[in-house]
Length: 195
Image (tube, rainbow, N blue to C red; front, top):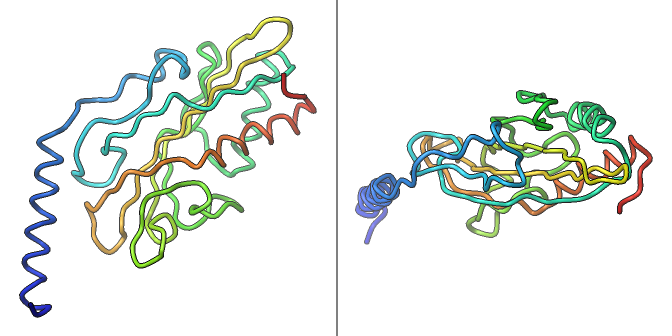
């Protein structure tokens, strides 16, 4: 089969797959700002319409406990996010939630290569995280763990899109490197030890 014959066939297959995924839409994500991140599985509903966090991916987050007060941890997290650099779109001290719900980047987040942060599949030996545009939500929740300690739960949800084919979103899995970086930078800022 020649390329001229395969190209329309591949477009039909891609459209059929997109239609099937759209038909299987799971609904909207829970409102993570209304409850602690650790008690709400964070994900997004649905298909591949447009670019966004629309492909289903759920995670319960990565937890760590530090020997510092909740207020000190929350304040230090503002500096941690600024140092990534990751601008804050969520800052709710009362709920203990801080982060960004729709950050886009390509290739690197600060000094961290995207391929080290996410697994978005790939082709021809090249990881999609390296060449696609990543859109992610990173939310951290802090909760009092008693005895002067604070439990930190970070949830990262991401999707990626080929910049040459708008609407070609794929789901990404976190490698845990970003969550570990947030916890490590926080400990450094607080000079705190894990519990």
